[in-house]
Length: 371
Image 1: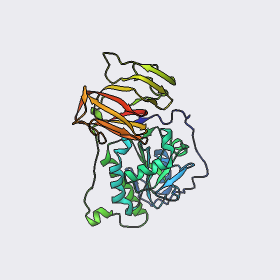
Image 2: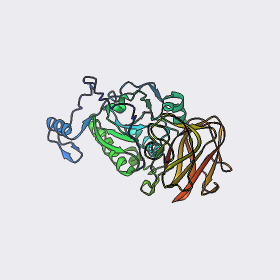
Image 3: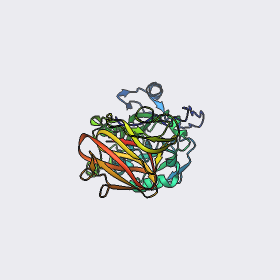
Image 4: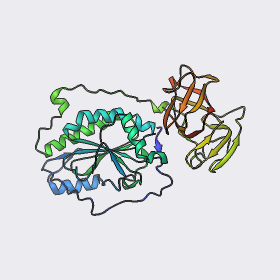
């Protein structure tokens, strides 16, 4: 699975456990309540069984800002809501492909008590800019609360390692379900429904959900799912801190300028650069360089930054046409703000050779991602 992995490698995993701040308090569990297939005889047994089988949810730790809300917290909503905490970052294609499902769940279930909180933990420095995150939230039409986690407080409190990762928190304040990465949307929705019905029963309400009562359409998804099992090329980073494995024709793990040349024969799934490239920890930049990659996937995306930088795109030795990405026009893409750019959209999963030539301006290349 093509996941964004190993969160902020520059940060040691800090166990952020704030004993005493989790003033959740268990909601009374009525006799006979079933949770995860377990039948509890009484409140005491329910507490013990849940403590043995589930972890308590943590609060949001040191948020650095909010979008779509003035404030939001987990502890204040436990007992009244089922909470879906989504760990994401805006340049992550794997995160973006989950958005249609998150938006659909929000549409269908918010009136039943579902609260989605998007915890934005940045992978790159530019993703710490509130304006950038706000623009991404608007672009993708996310209308649930988003929390900026620039200090990785909540990320570390949950010992998280992946983008995206989802945590479902039940009425009792326990994490009742987790999902790493994309896929298994039906299973996740099933768990949402189970926990919402439990919430309604706990409140003494009829456990029928709104979509059942009103016979709403099953979904309104504009799904962008891909078969990640058919993608053979892994995510490839340009920056010196993470280019060790796949930068084939340059010195890895070091910052500074390198003058590179692409050999006649190239290996599959390896990154090749030509001409002058300046390597920083997070990205490599050039004003006249080329990028070559032999890949196998359906879609190719890149996290890039430029100053109206013009880049010519070649596919299998020819200027790209039918396989052009969303922003590629006449085989050329213009790179501006730091974000994820669609470079190639093939009809099928296949092996191809991609070449990018910088024609004008300066390009900063962070990573390749595939779908």
